[in-house]
Length: 313
Ligand SMILES: NC(=O)c1ccc[n+]([C@@H]2O[C@H](COP(=O)([O-])OP(=O)(O)OC[C@H]3O[C@@H](n4cnc5c(N)ncnc54)[C@H](O)[C@@H]3O)[C@@H](O)[C@H]2O)c1
Image (cartoon, rainbow, N blue to C red):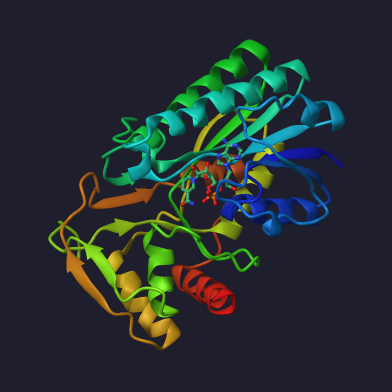
């Protein structure tokens, strides 16, 4: 079976991908600098290298016959990217370094973690044909990587799929707890387990059904499945990964109270700059090109994430 190099394999999504690849019979090599990831999340059957993507990656490619790369490693905190562009530039330089080693060792396939952040302030239901116009440096790094990967595809014949994720949530069975909660799902969970007093909902005067922002939440297990399918597909390009269903922040808070049977205290705060009212993925292309369908609902994601938090705290 093929050997897959998973960058960022000690992180939230990468660790689930490692476990899933192994259970599908792949051999797995992981590179992670552990800046956010945790070594104990990496399945012990995978070979692990603690390296930064900007480091010399030669030995990873010399010691293993890599058939394809799934590239998750990146810094991803939007606000931080607007304060420390130097750090976030390594999302780009690390990707170039990785691609150069792939060229040197004749590795012909890469699946790249991109993001809905490449669309910037586009709103509503977003297809891959919508304009890309990132409004933060993190989103810019993702878009630049997509373009560089596309060029390496043209110049060196590397097959590529850049997957633009919407809001990833749920637990893939590894009982993951975000060490640095910045997104609404882990924030709600921290309130439930007593690590935080209440949820602050940013803005309730948007033009949406209840005034709060609407987002598209995709389960991490469903998301990872799309990567496995992308490894074998004969298609190069960008594909959205979402459910095509929008849930408002207020609905998410209410549904959590209902599913867990425990009231989630919350208050309304001011709007945050750069938050579009509605962000929903059109997932038609993923359905068609990858023959993929998300299976887990937001209520499933609430249950699995809460179970993880309950056990970890
Ligand atoms: N979680 C989401 O909702 C979401 C949405 C859109 C896109 N993404 C993208 O998906 C990918 C995985 O996200 P995640 O949620 O698992 O994040 P995460 O922070 O849990 O995982 C990223 C991993 O990459 C490692 N890493 C970061 N920079 C590195 C570098 N220069 N060299 C080596 N390792 C490095 C970190 O230690 C971490 O283990 C990222 O590229 C992220 O931008 C995530």
